[in-house]
Image (tube, rainbow, N blue to C red; front, side):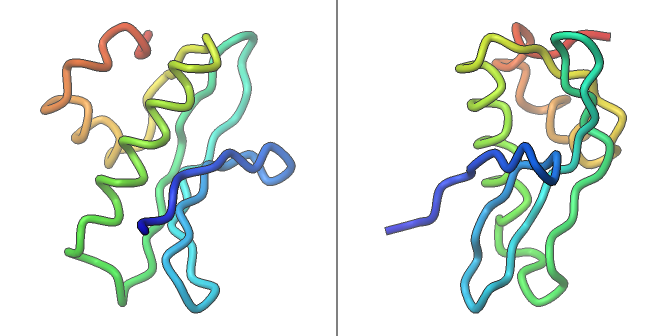
Length: 93
C-alpha cells in the first residue's frame, strides 16, 4: 500500500513518507485562510520516481478538503499546476 500525504502543521509542511525515514515535503506559510506553498523537497535517491507528483497531488487534495486556498510560490508547484488545472478551485494569486 502506498503512503499518503499528511499535513504536519507544527513544521508547516505536507509530508509524503518514502521509506527508511525518508520524507518528501512541501513547505508552506500561512497567510489568512491561504497556504503559501514556498518550497518542495524530494530526497535525491527518490528523484524521477514520481514522489514529487504524488506529494503535489496529496497536498492539493488536502488543501481542497480543508476548504483553504493555495498561493503558489514554489517553482515545482507552479509547474505541477500548469498541467493539473483540475486544481484551479484551490489556487489563488
